[in-house]
Length: 177
Picture 1 (cartoon, helix red, strand yellow):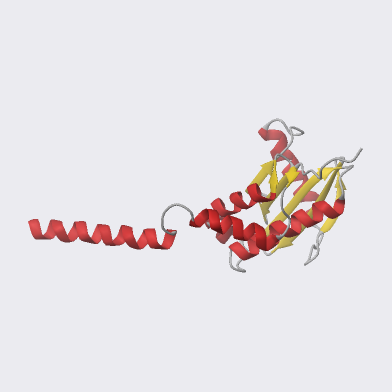
Picture 2 (cartoon, one colour):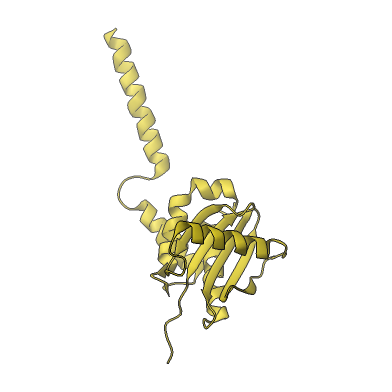
């Protein structure tokens, strides 16, 4: 019986194996300590590999782990031993491509942390409850950037508005003195 393609987790770690953004979709790792131990062991296992532009696949702890490194960020997608490696690889590629678009080709830890909200939205657009929703990086990025633009003005415009409001308040105070 065929099932929907599923993902157990998506990890984005830095060059030291520390979390940047992670999302777990199963209870295979029920507590935080188990999740951190899994992340560390996957990082150590794949650290010596030189993953270039193409995704690498490894069997680890009864899981299929597909991974890719871009500068100082390590991207991982984990599935069960029965899951299709090609689907996991397309999820990984879609995630990496979307991050590349969202971060404007400046994929590094500092920029990723500055845009963590968009990265987390990106994870939500790719997988929901372990079920793969989208794997095309440009579509994912478009949806994430549309979410960011909803509501009020952009972050840059809000900063300008806040600056003008502050300047107006200081000007008013100086007139009253």
